[in-house]
Length: 183
Image 1 (tube, rainbow, N blue to C red):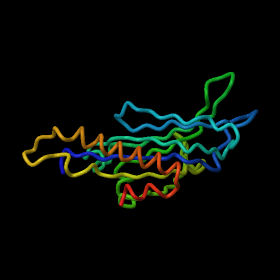
Image 2 (cartoon, rainbow, N blue to C red; image 1 turned 180 degrees about the vertical axis):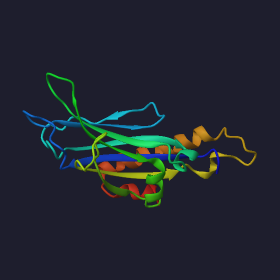
Image 3 (cartoon, rainbow, N blue to C red; image 1 turned 45 degrees about the vertical axis):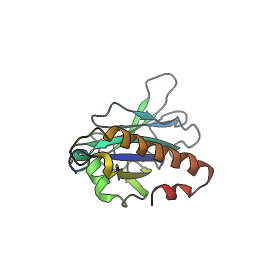
Image 4 (cartoon, rainbow, N blue to C red; image 1 turned 120 degrees about the horizontal axis):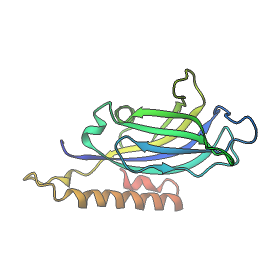
């Protein structure tokens, strides 16, 4: 299906056992989520209570072209920072993972739970664990009609986004209910 696209629904849940980068005061951690080549950057709220074990539950959504999930050169990047009052925010660590890796490790169209070590640029070691979940699913087959015209793509993708938004809204009211949308 050359020219098709995939939808990534990512929830950045939490981190545990992060490196404490503060000399004084408490760790107040937030995360920034990006995908190479995509202009959309998501930023979690700052967790003021969890210190080295922050919790966010941020949902991020990305539309990925078909080739991005097949190559090793497109990356999901999650950078962690400690908010500081009187100086620039301090780098805590990051996770950089190819979209292809996520694609290969996914649980079909079902939710996949992932726990990966946080790294620091130019330093060896493990600096905590990042916990997230994701769904990667292909947009519907009717996106391309028989004569190769792609005019139906935008409308079909809009339906996929609407279906996902409805599932999210319903899930927040009735846990477990979004499964009816993804059978």
